[in-house]
Structure formats: structure tokens, C-alpha cells
Length: 195
Image (cartoon, rainbow, N blue to C red; front, side, top):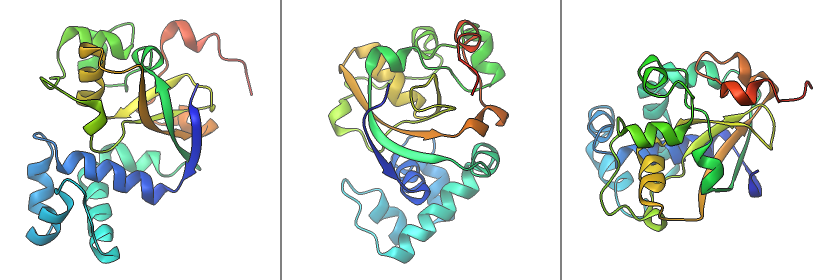
């Protein structure tokens, strides 16, 4: 269950997502192509200080680059929260409905993706210096959760056993079950009481 949940806005969630990815070796190069150089450099600094117009450009970039995940997701009435999850609960989170992941982890558990090593972890990863929090969604506050964004960071945390809890962002909506990327682990899906 999410510990110390604090409501945040959708804009805050998008900014978090962009700040995490702009620093990523996999996604950073794409942000570089769709942002002015000065905005990219400021956003990629250790402690981004951007003007409101620059934040708006960063939000537009994440919406553009991650549109396959975000377009449908943002159409639901989602309440966003920042809080912490126990690492054991994060390990049991479901993975998004992606064939590449489902083939490797028929259990649909994040911990099995981490064990399989298909998402590269980061050697010497320090969760206290993590840029941006992983983002999960759920139909209810108490879960079960499905990880949307932050696979490399989460796999590093699980592989290195670097923390007892993880700061996260969780989006909650009963409708999120209709999102094409959403799935629950098979053994959990039948246990969730009807609304």
C-alpha cells in the first residue's frame, strides 16, 4: 500500500516523467531532438530550475515522445499521488502488457523482469540520487499496482536490494483497467473485490 500518499497534479507527474527520462541514456537523445538546446541543458542539470514556459516545453516533449503510453492513459480521470512503496511490494507490481516482457515473465511480476536482466540495471545505482520517481497505476489506492515508467531504475533497485522502500508516483482510477497497456498478475486479478 502506498505510504504517506500526497496528491499531485497530472502536470507534476508529467514533469517527473520528463526529468527522469531526459537523464536516461536510452531516452535523453530523443528529448535533445525535440527541445531547444538551452532547455535540454537546464532540464538535464542535477537540480532543474526551469521557467514555466520551459516546463511547458518539457511537458510537450514527454507527451510527444511517450504518446503510445500517455494518450490513452491521460484520457482516464486519474488521481495522482506521490508516496512510497515497500521494495517487496514494488517487486510484486505487474508489468505493462508488452509482448517482450510477457514472454520473459509469464508471471507478469516486475521482479521476474529484473531477474531476467532484459531491462539493463545501472551498476552502482543509488536510489537516493534517483532523478524522477517510478510511475505506477492502479484501480484502487491499495493496489495491485502496474509499473508504467521507470523499469531500469526499479530493476536496479530490486537487483541491488538498495532500499527498503521506494519513492513513487501512483495514478489511481477504476477506469485504468481499460488502458491497453494495463494488466494485473494472474493470481492477483481474481482476488480483487468488485467495486
